[in-house]
Image (cartoon, rainbow, N blue to C red; front, top):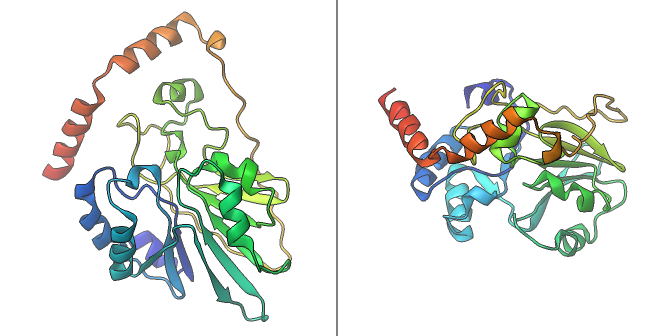
Length: 248
């Protein structure tokens, strides 16, 4: 929160996975309420947020100063008379294209469009539309900076973190905080991303999607470690970590 506020942002956008369990909802909203942005704060839901219903997210977000975009859009008037559109997709749709068609209706060709879509793998569909930038989360950066270790966590997304370009659409995947699947982060730093928009600008720092890594490429040692990893009782590990956090 202090790092984000020190940047004095115009807009704060949060791409889901706020909580793991329902008990985290109120502490999360208290944390969100301390964020400050000149224009506003918007968020979308992730797959970890389903323990709380959409209505409660809407109300809790409103009280904390954050607008939840659940298959919704909003527009911001820019100084040059054009508009910046913010679109938010709810997580888990089997047909994103149907929702995007509705959200894109009436948007002018030269208006800037930012889509908040929790799952970066949806970019294959999202990039078909006239969207300038997609912001995603979900992967937690893969939770590990070493690729052959990372496969034990269950992350197989081609778009783990950073900036990509698919067709004419940019995708940025934030590494976020915390974890999913396994209670570990290794060489995968928590991240607050500052994005500055420049009229007529262009970005060349684009990453290539990761190539799929098949089981046949694993050595016997890697296969053994993967077997041991999946035998670990992550519930017990998570409880131990949380107890230590509470002591601190």
